[in-house]
Image (cartoon, rainbow, N blue to C red; front, side, top):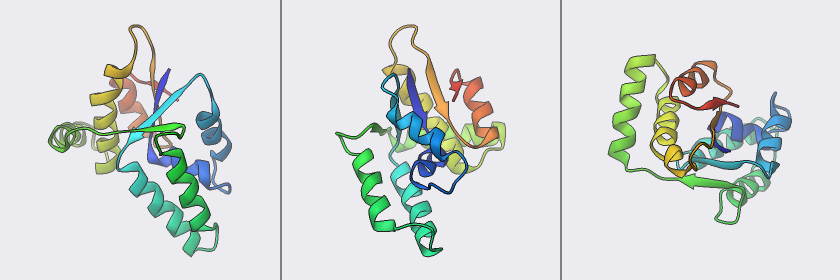
Length: 146
């Protein structure tokens, strides 16, 4: 199964004091899953980790290093890129149709435009998010809620 990881899930893999930390780590370490995410995820998660460091919760340098390793070509999470105009067009449609936040729609757009093409015939595709509205829309797009 290919699972798209929203930033809300990936950030929790590095923030041990967050609800969902263990579940996020499990996704990253499950050999049965191919985990993917969009290119903006590095920016979003870096921001979350930096804010957590400023609040005294974590060591940003260490966690940013782990994030970069996980998103590297050798890491467990593959970053997916899509033409900006295609992603923005679909994200705009999702925002206007489902009243999603902009970045939630962007992640869904990237997932919708890339993940089905990566899946083998009959293979399920998943979407992991901590946001209920985003996860519900992912289901309507054919993703299994993770």
